[in-house]
Length: 423
Image 1: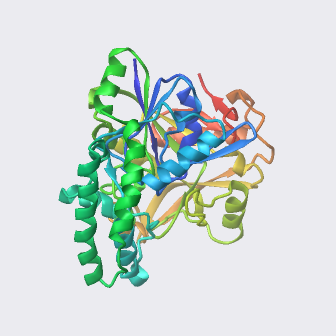
Image 2 (image 1 turned 90 degrees about the vertical axis):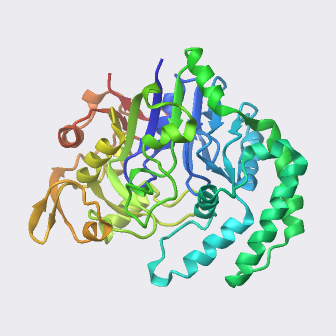
């Protein structure tokens, strides 16, 4: 039975949650493998909209066990706020498991984030200031506190106090605000006690599920070009959203994975700073933002819009070994008279092959486009590929030609059933 990975192929916000929600119906476990509460997933079920930050998207199915894997950094106030909100709306989180190996985020991480970002001036990365990067840094420095530590309440309390006192000295030296150590210890002792029932050995749990012939779905946050190694560094996240990160962040092995679905919007967006070859400014860009509701689920920040970029999508296919692509938000382009698609780059008047490995170079390339006539009709009611307007089929076939893998799912609206699935 397969292990499927769902990964964003652009700069995030591709509509992964919708596809994960669609796929979860045929899976028994849905696990997050990296990131934190700095990225949000939005799922629309009927007339209800749910915004998720940490809880895996499969939570809406009673047969699914949602798992927060070892590669995730967990902010406990956010997690329990999310759990309480879901429970109040009738969505049970009783099946949720949190890896004992997942690292926790504390107030000092957020303080470090704010100090670091403010010191960059005009060179700000555009971080969400959620403490994600500093938490991963502590993990790498081997001074982090993990979810499993809450199973020994006194030891957890001592660890929090020791780290808070140590970080107090560092933050004070950097000009940061004083930490209320006693308050932090009291708050996180309470949160730790609440977390304890959810903590599990998720690595063995996932392997046991495989032994039972269950289907597993692994979901990442952010996306390929925010990957700390392969993204537009330094305008990246602090972990590995690419499919390779799914193994390290879940404890499953590479040979366990049989399906890798790349999610791409029919256009492109990114949040924060960084190069963007197909960026679309002016009236047409505003139109995409307005129709697509392109504002961050977590931060509310306006996303920067642009045309679909097949150079970066082809590179995402390579980095992730994608077996297929789900193209989302096709309906956002319903009223455009012309739809442009970037099919190549030029640098200093010369065509370049491949996606540049240097962010500065990427910022200097000029996008080359193919224009496709708009279809000027709504696709939201369509469920069969043959019923899509010929112009939109032309767009999909252009994607397949350039990137070399099939487009198997096409999102035609925000709701979970508004999707064309190709057999």
